Length: 255
View 1 (tube, rainbow, N blue to C red):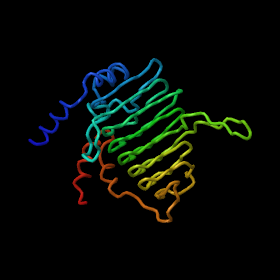
View 2 (cartoon, helix red, strand yellow):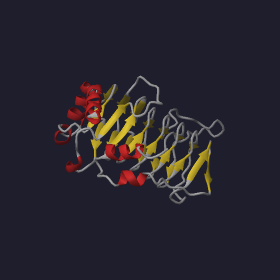
View 3 (spheres, rainbow, N blue to C red):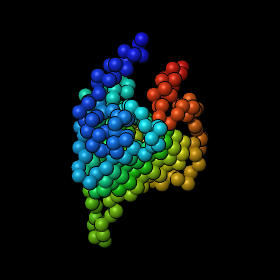
View 4 (cartoon, one colour):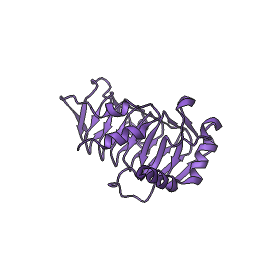
């Protein structure tokens, strides 16, 4: 009974105007009619030429597999749900996921943001792309995580007069865990199963490091100890569209 009441309350909190817009106006009809994306307290702006894609098989497309802007946990204090502001470029979802309240997803200059299957972000997630950001499958972000592939402003070397490159792609592998208040900057490449410690700043290519590497500090250094999230195995037992069941079991684990 409690679960039924919980689902009804969640249904009532959906921002239905923008949910209808994103599903029926920005997804193919065979996907949009199933309303796979639910928005909460949303600010949705998709300019002409910008695109939103849901890259999943039709059999995996179900109602509410993506919940964007919902109150995921209570420790994120924000009255905003989610802002999606796509002036140009593309936003790609690779499957189900949850992004908590206070978050924003922004593209400029034909930037591309790819979010893999089963992304989970507690809240206050900031993702801005002027070039290309790839976030792999089963990536977890704690609160106040920022991911940028740009400096936002063009810089010039005062000695040589040469303009510096303003953007560089970001690649985050599968099963990564990015802890609270971490910042991922342009040029970052993280291998699978990476752990980024709290309050860390990542701005280099670490793709040559082994899976399970742990990065801490500002800027980060690499710990010799290799770690892996055993709780991720629980979520991986469920179908690709069924994120909510995996997260429910995960929350029941002893703390």
